[in-house]
Length: 556
Image (tube, rainbow, N blue to C red; front, side, top):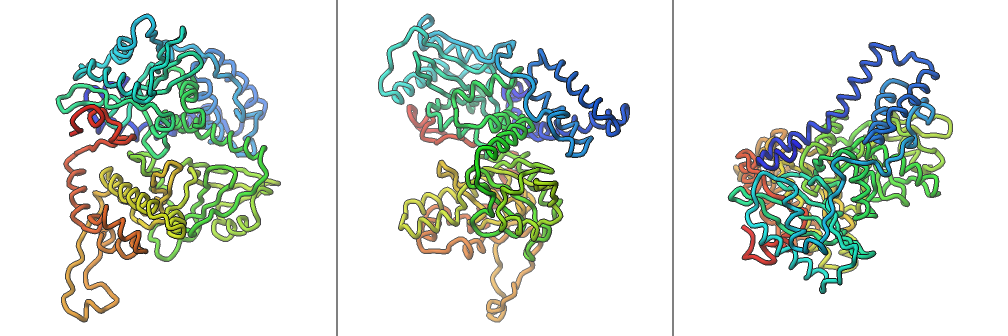
């Protein structure tokens, strides 16, 4: 309800703070509970029998629970803070779910139904939005409903005959993020389902309007990309929301959906269960990830699984001026800011036990060379004390090299344009990547460029963007040393050209679309906007889909 109130009252800054607070909230409650058990029951000295009975009694409390999967994960989190990992098996914690999440009733129901055969199609759509009971009035809801009808007709080509079961199902709560509220649903007609998402925004006059309707399932999937900020959703039964979303996006893992709903710990639990399940049904080995080796992170991957695993090296390259605690803070920061679709989210794990036989000899040697402090063995298992996991992407430098070899100028142009757009959007969101080399960015399966190397990120407002002053004389210009002072957070955009424009084709594309990124003025202007409190709109869908561009006179 608070997310709805903030949306209605345009309290955008409070919304961003709430996203940051929510991430820490879970860890705080786990720590409080563990401290209580230590203080009142000396929990770490309880017998195995007591813990087994505690789990059985806990299961009994979940019989009519609306969120049993979350309760099980919380139990695990508290237990794992108290006892050694050798106890992390099904007798003491919920390695597998003990209570089904199917058919849990919710009040209000998870989704509402509208029946156009009885109410009429336009009336159903109209009521669908009115029933969210926003206190702000709509600018012109009849106009927007007409836009939706026309957009649906254009998308389908021809409107199919209405079957007897024709209905529109809409999740009861809107999905709040940044300055928008997203209405998620699907139309059911016979055996066919048509998913949709409608962003609701504020007009300059302070009224609500429907910005577009997204009808492609893959575009709806992009809304739920882990490279974006998590949603705020009011839901009594999260599993019901996840089940509904899976019917729209069947290829989206449940772990990612829980994470995007703001339930990150549940997302981690389900991700690790999926990983263990995958290991039982595959035979390939973990290997060192292809690409240029990093100075801070050792990265490895399992070819049959679409993720990479990253561990912080014990010793960094000589050019790096950060320590381990700083790197961890940077990765935590990424979870707390608006990633605007340009920074990959990460799952952070401690004491991960994986079968040693699934690691290639080369990777084991690399791990013991680069991160011996994080390695431990227990029988047939290799224990990694701390690691990050994120979606695998093709490194941008490899993508560009392939495009160069294949003579694909169109791919080079697209990738360079996307790279520059990523830099711009991150800057507007108050994030400076720090290390802007091509290798620190990846290309998603949708061709979007995303940043994923965080050890040098800074807030834009903490940087000082400068022009290189002219040399005082010829000798200074020819010297290998700079003739100007350089402080720690000084940035000279003119220097980007040296390591970015590595070929004629890349140079041509970059100078066509992003030449201003080499000018300190661009960065200084972005800083001024941030400091003035301006919060830009970031649309997780193309501008070309917005109703004001499709049916209006262009967006302002």
